[in-house]
Length: 528
Image (tube, rainbow, N blue to C red; front, side):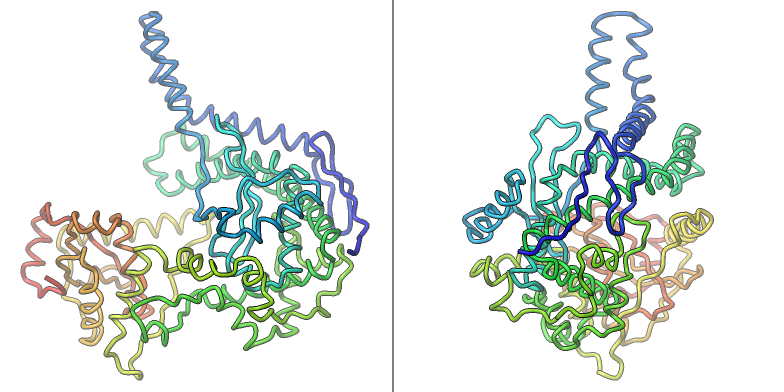
């Protein structure tokens, strides 16, 4: 093993000394106090109205029964108001992946980190160290290592061990103790400000006061907490390099970054050939980033972009700074992904790999599989020359552009009102596009009836009015929101880029507004 001389001692009682590419920033003890104070203030702002409601009768009648009921009600509401973090991870049992658990246990003991409670997997090209139930919880804290399946396929065992050692370093140095409160405080006030921004006209003065505080507090707090997070990253890098090697960690960082960059560049495209060929989504999705890098090795320009990709102000340092701290020249690394037999996935997961990929794929859920099948049906029968190109998702305004968000909400409200009052027109899509949509909705058995309209708003919007069978929806374990998402891919395939769309749902057990009912009665159905 190669050692590198980066000794960063981050402790709750003092600031970390500077190392290669790090900054001292605010002392963690003061940052922790700021996070706790801001979190307490958030709870106070959040629960003060509840306290007035639950404790007012006790103050008026001054009876111990009222006081007891009021206090219990307030405690219950305070508990329900606690933020939670839910992800799409699946815990692996030791029986499923004994070789992976054995290797991680060996590394954990060697690094001096506390033993993990579980290893979880997801569908990201990433890894993480999660402490479940930390904070205000009656349950004990559980340490969970999260590994993305594409990550395990992308890296050989040496590089994957470097990544795991990095995450174990976070557990070893107890970064989660402060990191939990930093994340919780930042997320709570960000959500408060966002909720007020979405509906400022109907927000109370109390809500707007909290949003004003968030806008003043968050910029400073984000800078301070992100500086602390960057120091933690350098420290975890140093521990990982001591376990594996600086080169293995550097290679893993760049392979992950370039794979994610390419995945981002392809976020608005799709393998239309695979979509046209089968109504079932591909099973080997985790292998796609590897095959892409093998077919098109990283260029010097991509490597340079990966080295500077991360911004200096963020939770992770720029990769060039991390390479400098590791003493590695990123441009000289061999960034060819391993063959399947040499990958961490093959070495550690073995025969359970296909089963895990099927359960964790991006098309694994009922709504996602139905979305693929509907899009496949829409493409069947279209000539190659008229094959649509997947349109880009509309760009949302910047989070700080409140005027743009208000205009967006106003346009959506205008379109919704026009649909409800029947102020719609016959749809002017091409017959081939209408036929493609007809084939798509025929696949979705929860949709019993459907109609297409044009809504006279800007930008030009297509309304699809749908009647849903609630019993079929429940039997397929779908929500109304998930039924809407099953349409999204098809609409992006069929509609021209400049056209927006909006669904209008109702159950078969309920009626439509009279004006809209009159329009659908006079319009040929897309289905039903």
